[in-house]
Length: 273
Image (tube, rainbow, N blue to C red; front, side):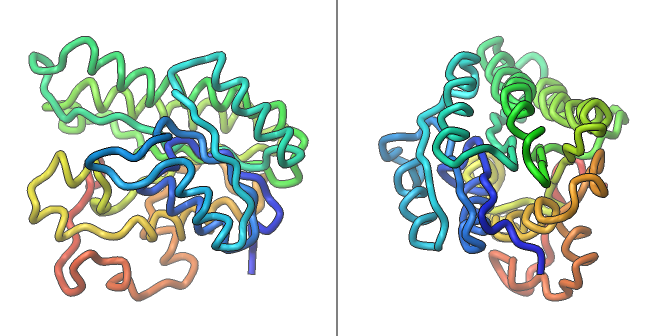
C-alpha cells in the first residue's frame, strides 16, 4: 500500500478542519508535518491551535513542527518554508489548504473582505508554491495539492458570491498553469474539492444547521488527499479531483462512515453539479 512514511508535508491552515485531518492522516504513516497557520492561542469559538495539532501528530506517529504563519506575509512564507526544510531535510508535499470565505454578493462584499479572500486564497497559494518549488525539485515524489474547485466558467458559479469564486478559481488556475510549468521537474500539481459539504467551521458559520447535519466529516478529504499524495507524481498532475471520485477509484464503497448523520443524503458542495 502506498505510504507517506518519511515524507515531509507543509500544510497551510492546518490548525483545524480539513488541514488538520490531512496532517493526522499523514502522521499515521509516519510522515513529518509542518503545521503553518495563524492560530497560536486558543480561539473562543474554534477548536485547535498549531500546538495542539502538533501534539496530535506526534501522538499519531508522525513528527511535527508548529509554525505561526500569516499566509498573506510574503517574507514570513519564505522563512516558514526554509524552517520546515531545515528541520526535516527537505519538503516533499505542499498542501495549500488555508482559505477565506465570504459568500456575499457584490454590493455586500467590502474591500477588506475582497482583499482577504484574494490574499489568503489565490495569492498565498501562488507564493507558497513559489517558495516550495526549489525544495520539491529535490524530492523523489513531489506534490502540490490545492484545495480548490474544478474550473467551470458558467455564470451560475459566480452569481451571488463573485469575489469568493474569483479567489477560489484563482487557486484552480494555479493548478492548471503550474502543472504544465513544473511537469519537466516531475512535480505534480493537482486540485482536490469535496463532492459534498464538509463539517468544518466554514460550513457551520455560513450555512443553516440542516446543511451541517447533511455534511461529511473532514476525514473523507484527508483520505482522498492521501491517495493523491502517495501516487506517482509524474503520472498524476493537472487534475481536478473530487474526494468521492478519488476514493471510489481506490475501492471505497461505504461513504456512510464519513457522514455527520449516517443515513441522511449528503448535501452537494458549492461548485459541484
